[in-house]
Image: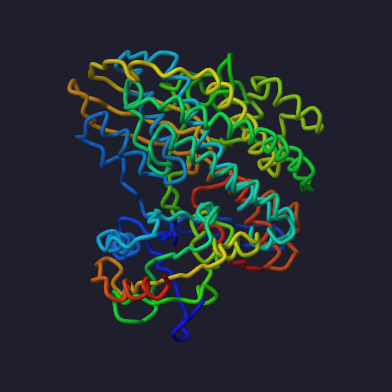
Length: 432
Length: 138
């Protein structure tokens, strides 16, 4: 390698930073007086952008909200319009949407477990540092993440902002040869996914039991991903169209993202909440590995979130394999759609938790108003509640650096989409 | 054969890595495999598999003439302080991870194209410098 002169390089960051956050902590006489997770990311205004656009255009527009979970945005929107228009795309479409969604969970969870969360448990400052001691674990994470991206690409043409999902089905069905190749890759990945669960089960989890309410989609026949009723550990059991009667979004001065509460209280959405509510719906081989490792759910230790993600990685690898082994390319990959006016509700489980959409639609199928409630905003109030309890349990007499590290680990348990920001976390401790 | 990977995004000067690939495609140089990636993060490591020689091209800010093409020493790339974030996992972090995992290609070059101070506009790529650089590598 050559260099003509010595230069210090900064890769431009403007287009690659998704948000910024900070934590403000006031402590007096050993008790937390104020704790604010501040999010400065400017409002994205997507709900306004989609007004006036036709339903199928909206599917690809909302995918742009997130580079990590575009499939979730597409699936919540497509479900909303199909419910309103009375469209049943049939079992082939439903199965293949689940496979595509499995790909998103796989890439998102594999990235988070290996590159973001696991270094915390071993005391490394980054995945790069962790890779020196655990190279095979990091390689496994990269392989699983890559496979998840390939699964999305199989249906959507590309893994970021895929372009395949339409109201009524898919624009195109994958070729049988491509699916056969994917089946081979999934067969190779399944033992890796199982090994990941065993690896995570051996992690040294801090003891930090907390009382909180889990909320997730749930349905009787399978582990809910793309549909279901909204249920909680405290007896909530509603159709998704009744969300606004129970959940309230509101602004707080220190965050540009809306906070959300259920009946006036914070709640948890995401992998741990899903496992807590739906572990009985896991397929037998997945439950078998859990039992073998002595893993039990429900859990009220937020540090078990990494374990929940590992179990969901095993789940989606297994399910994608099962569904693709039975793959037959259909003659048509979408059914006819006729729009109608009304209010459309959609809700699916994004990797980070449930993602709720509502669209007011006119008779041509154009959007008049939209409302989108993503998981990270829902978890903000819960994160603040958790930080307060976790830092007090940890001990406020630790120095600022130790407190910052623990706070970051707590925040990363939620895999917030502002994870970039939370690593920049500037901890401002005011001690009196 | 050299695998040339242009890294970028559709936004402003960050397109420079992609524009470089377009210039190489027009020049129709033999024995090049051109791959365009949109902010691959840790996914960049997959493109080091099964290949001996790789040239990465990305936009950089290095106080040189906008559009200027410079061969960089990967060790000079600054890693952000954001190593545990997916969003902050850039080229420098991906190269550091590949080095730790011993998966760097046998020969790796990184070419930076100066983005200038105004990241919203796209400076004119110095195509001749790019072609000279390729001729030197081949």
